[in-house]
Length: 302
Ligand code: NAD
Image (cartoon, rainbow, N blue to C red; front, side, top):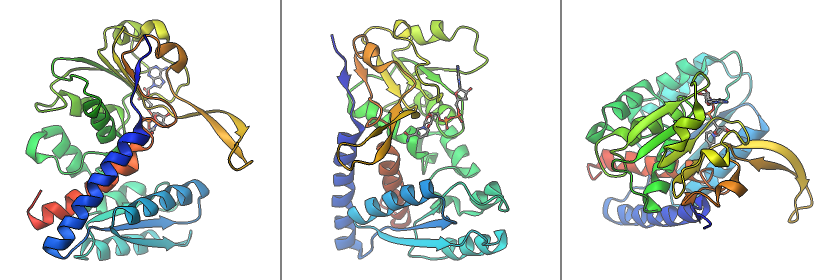
């Protein structure tokens, strides 16, 4: 039987509508809307297109969006000064610094300078610690893992007592999603295993997963015979495996593939995310959710 597709594109629409309605309600009751600033240093084309999408989404849900574009030669000191300015700006609830930064700037120093209560990306050590403690301590779960958990919950997949296997141990995806799934609470309570490049028998671990979350960045890493029949497969991988001409624009575009052999896996799994159109659209969506949450914390209504 073919698996049920968990479409990030559809879930994104539902969540953005919910956020838009909540923003309108807060505006009416409290006279404010969430304020989000995106700091872009330099002109990296991938960063520009990512930032453009963030701005478009922020406008769509009714946020006050500030685009702060700086030249490539901005000094580290000047960037830290900007962050300090936004940390102290009452109208700003979320601060984003688009990565990568130019080589002369220390990423870590910059990200750690953001007020943890405005760190809507959830990468500040204080927010990583809050996530580890779990429960009410959590303010801003990092966006991609938060999107993954939201997809699992909205698809109606049981997580309590489920065997969750996470392939990959990065700070952005693998480690935080593993941590989130093992917490006490709804959408979690799972038994979690993390596997990585030094794991001895990847296949054996994957085979017992009720929920398999793959974030390795290796196309076709997970073979169909590693998938437990009826399980939920979340493919986070985004790999460029070629190029094609877009039917819509006539321009060259990348052919993307996940880390799972999708065509074969969809005949075995109970639920599966496609690539593209699966986890990808959830990241910016959850960024909007975190920014709204930041304002709600400030207003004492979270
Ligand atoms: P990363 O390179 O930082 O980490 C990859 C992890 O996978 C490492 O911990 C490594 O140990 C593990 N790994 C790699 N090859 C392996 C193998 N052969 N066997 C077992 N483990 C292996 O990558 P990341 O930032 O976590 O991203 C992972 C993938 O997810 C990438 O394809 C990335 O593009 C994608 N991604 C997508 C989104 C999104 O859709 N919004 C967001 C973040 C990352």
